[in-house]
Length: 200
Image (tube, rainbow, N blue to C red; front, side, top):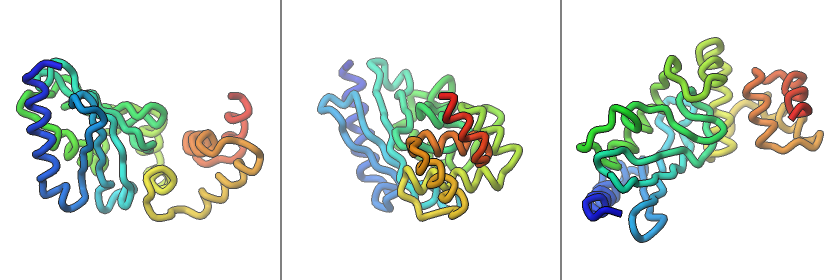
């Protein structure tokens, strides 16, 4: 990796480690390899959101051309959010694309992702199914996002009704992750979710 990128990332890495947000357990960053090309980030789900109490792992890849091009970031932890793919963890956020500026840092990226969890942009979705639920049925969206936070990010337990439906389909021998994805995308209707699972 180019020398400028390495020096810059080392400096930003220290900035995150020493930050007030890290001391409050809001953001975190770890090295994956010694040459600073891949990092593992972590953000806490913001308060008063369905993600509260969850910890979200991020894969951060630093390009050769950093800081002139943004890092490539995706969610490793599964999440139900209009701007994050529920399948791949890909993120739709302007600063990770065309609105990136060389003055931005790892810390601003992590804080921007945390802010995105608190303020979704359903009109610029990464996941159309989630965005549609967010707009059509906000209460179901919140319950679904909370359930994903509980199952995948360690947040406190959520809707017992949704948990029962998951258990019911898992008892039929379906994979738990597939069951959660099917129920979430089919408005928690057991029948249509079952049809989807059988068609896959």
